[in-house]
Every structure is written in structure tokens, then in C-alpha cells.
Image (cartoon, rainbow, N blue to C red; front, side):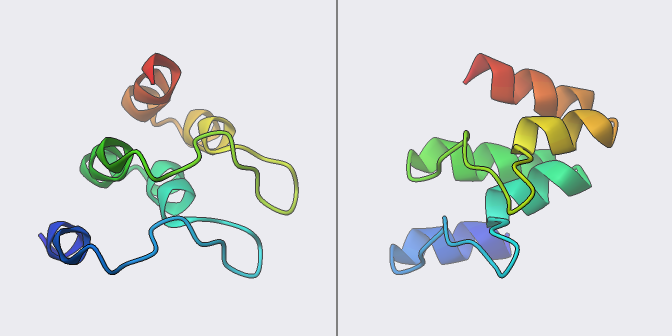
Length: 77
């Protein structure tokens, strides 16, 4: 709900990296937040191939953490 409200403002940069170059999409994929991953992907404003400072992709994070549905979603995108 909060993510939807923030996205609705159109004033939020949704693809910034933190000090480890991890984006909100990467954090959502890594931690299994499938609904948030879907919301962020629908914006078309995220880079699904972006890597963190250790060259790890969000697909790798999702797969390593056992988030199969998210991994499949990313592969289908």
C-alpha cells in the first residue's frame, strides 16, 4: 500500500542504488517481496539487469534466497 502511494505521486526515484548499489527492486527480490517486485516492474523505470557492488543481479539474489516465483517473474520480463 505504501509503495503504491509513493509510486502514484510520480515524484519518487525508484531506481537509485544505495552505498552497495542495491536498488529497491533488488531489495524486494532479495527478500521475497513479490508484490513489490511486480509493482516496480510495471513502472518500466527499473533496470532488471543492474548489478550491486559485488556484480550480483537481482535474479541471482532471488534464486539464492529461494524466491522461485520472483526468479520466474524476472526471467519472464
